[in-house]
Length: 250
Image (cartoon, rainbow, N blue to C red; front, side, top):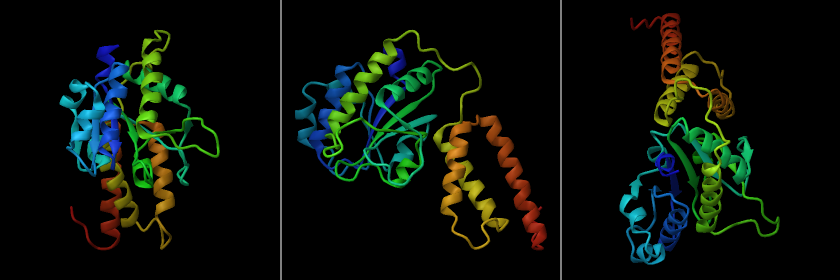
């Protein structure tokens, strides 16, 4: 299990209470994981981190800090976001056990996988959820649905430990691994710029179609070679748009 666990990171976004960082480090360490990543923490470093980690020093020693979630998962192929609320973002919804099964299968390829946890008060925002391939919701009572951050981390770490010990979970059929998050973000930038260049939206708001296209390509999970083909198609479309407007940049 230890070698598979090295490809999984627990990402805490915009954490406001430093004690929760330490508690999360302790939570994942008890389940055999040691990769904790912070994205724009409000208070770090802080003495409460070490105090609440309760000896999970190897996790803290490897901990990395990034400017935002996009940077924290740039080299990841898959990202799963924990959320108690749907927030109007149409993502596949999984239980912790379902998500753990999918993650365990992906780690056996292996590819880099991220589990995202949002700010204690507000959770993951819409821009962060749009980076995810699926949303994970921990079943809880309707009138008191919000778990403490470290509790949510513990639930997922436990389910992942069980899934990684389950040898019946097989990796997907062998093929080129899907493109990493940074490659996908560059593709989305190119795709959305091309749609504007060819006036695809015709004055309509672009957000809805851009979200739908993100979901489409997240399901498809293109690899790096396939992205190069798509970039080539988009480049030709941009060239034709320039020709149509008398601005051939060839």
